[in-house]
Length: 619
Ligand code: BGC
Ligand code: BGC
Image (tube, rainbow, N blue to C red):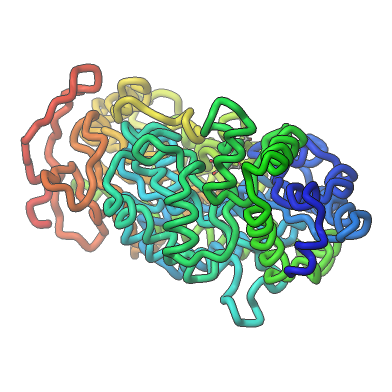
């Protein structure tokens, strides 16, 4: 290794430290510069084709690989990274698993590992060797637009899942399955404190003591590294006013020295330019703070130039460049990149393509079942008999993009249609098939019927897709901006039709009015392509027995008011509406949720209300 590093020129070393967005660079350029890595940004596809096939992805990977291994001087293979954050989520036809918040509710580390294994197989098959996952954020303020990417508000679950996700993706280090066929490299992201920013602002400032930072936000990373993670992505946020990307104490000190991390640190998307207004200075600060690879959205040539300048002016030492490149090359060697099956051959090796295959979709459906949380079941309305006459309403009823949320095919996820997910099943179609088979009827309705045509209404509603800062909120009230579904539920109720609410959401929202307007209330989180998992739990078997009970338990405390945005297990004045760990099952003793306070204080100044009404007295 030392020999290869010392044989590289300064320009070649710097090129290894660049990760370019793949639409901004040709394979020939990557080969002639000896670029270390590429990524595909959210919503960027080979040949600009949103419906690109696995073969098209693999061809693209092959072209970059060939350019760097056959035509570059040192033949160091390029490494491609992608955001496979809930399945191979940027790729048409992939199985889309529930977002992490739903997996947190499932409380099942083995499930997380199996999903990571399936995701790795789908990514590998498209010729890609690295995912920017798992996200190990510990989410402390539900206004944050990335809440759903986190497993929980509490380090307990994040810690429990981190190692299983990493092992599922990469395999066990020291074992022959490590980075064998079907395995890919994982990333612990984002280091550190991105879920703790003030006001839940994306890329904001996390203001807390060092012990709080380490106790709450580091345990997941520690477990991930112990499980063999070799890549850590630095976080966009600041800690006490200092950008993590420029914070040598956190990256060089805590991560590399104290935690003994021997892999490499990749920056987040252009984040190394946020430290200082002068781009050269900014890059220099990031690299000196411990960032080894720079993720560049488009101007990779410019960034190469900044780093070469910093080297020539001795503002970044030769040792520092050598250390960064050693870390990158060591990983490429350790992960066996040179000997891996050629991207183009990977699909062919399989008898059946794995992308979106039946087994993976069944696993996703199982995950959906496990992630659902039942908040209310007055009169034991659920589970329903399948031979009922059911009205299905709400804008989430037949809406796969909404089921999937952000980071699904595109970055924000709201540009998609059902046709972009031909492998998926809507909640409506899953319910309709169960009900029709049992002799019942199911119809989508826009408004409640006037006649007595239905026994029950299922209203599927919730947040529309968003990603990152675009999802940041000022308050948690859902009906304030989206009153339509609430009105619909009230209409059904006023006609004497019992209402089952199915809430699609990336985080807890204040939904007291909707809870009052429904008889049963299910939180489905962002379930992904497999709407069938919801029908599995809502309906009994035709013989009346229960098919699947609820298993999900809140991994986020549920707010009592729209302004109760930071409510986390262990708080001194902990007073959520539903506590961390809450989730009803069909076995619970009969208990009606009483009428909740509907005062929407989302526009008024923050009020701290000390009204502790215990709603489920038996719990
Ligand atoms: C996100 C990362 C992601 C990267 C690449 C950034 O904006 O913060 O989580 O991996 O983009 O898409
Ligand atoms: C890209 C994402 C990236 C984001 C960062 C988007 O344009 O597609 O991958 O995370 O920008 O702001």
